[in-house]
Length: 220
View 1 (cartoon, rainbow, N blue to C red):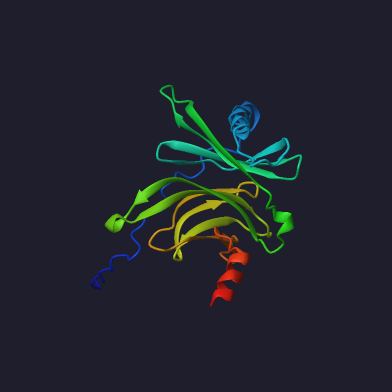
View 2: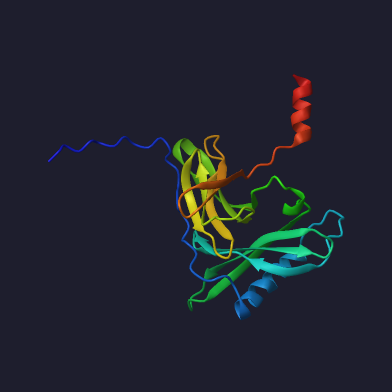
């Protein structure tokens, strides 16, 4: 027998694949109605900053993910004024085994996929917690959901410094992940893969502000 070669310790000691994979089909029927009630209630609490965002249309639900004892079901909805509402409904498991302790978070945006032909993934994200790592450094545990804008995808990964820290198979061209972000100066990149393992797209969660870039160049 050949001697075993010891494996060096990883230099990326960070929480990975922390959330349960999706457990249920996309919400429908009475369950979708229950979630919609909480989502729409949160819509009513959105600070629109004086904008008339209009009335929400049909809600599109995304795969569920469970982390830290709570299940998160993201959603998006277009409005009558051409905005997009995005957010999630979360809940915990009650004593009877059913969902309880519902909560919902919603925000809005005017940045739509059809106005950004360079996008290859349409992403939404929200920080839902903090993970403490080595030497007290922290990561933002981030809920990420969206749709691919290019065909042929099968799986989406969230990568931190090229290390996959979560993944999700597409469900009706939708995905949800929970992954650590902003850890040790590393930031998440979301990648779309085909069944054969070909990378089809990659997007950062961060959009550079062109005005800020121009100001920075002028100041050099």
